[in-house]
Amino acid sequence: MLDWVNTFDDLSVESLDQLASGHLIGQMLATLAPSSFGDLRELEDTAGNWALSASHLKKLLRSLEVYFESALQKGITDLADIDVNAIAKDQDEDSLFSLLEI
Image 1 (cartoon, one colour):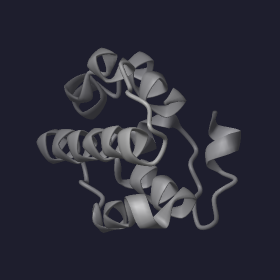
Image 2 (cartoon, rainbow, N blue to C red):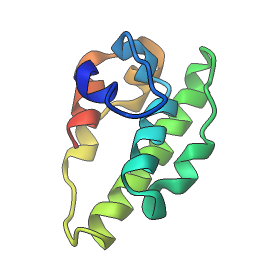
Image 3 (spheres, rainbow, N blue to C red):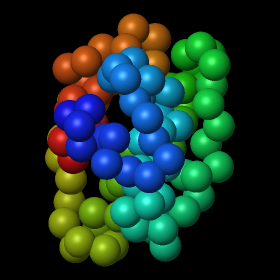
């Protein structure tokens, strides 16, 4: 997974923990589909503030849901399985992998 993440320009990720704030995932999505996820570039690094990280991750999930429904004409059911608080607070790898797999 980290090999794929590091294919994005200007990203250097050494561990999955670095993705737990949503900041870098937002950067990746904005690179992939700027017209749909450009606002995610504005997510700042939360520097250990898990509540702010959880808020970022919720925004990211809402953006993914809108993208799937409008651009792909598909519903997305896996969002309920993603525990943003566990990702933000505990860097839960299972929930983080679920998010990245979407």
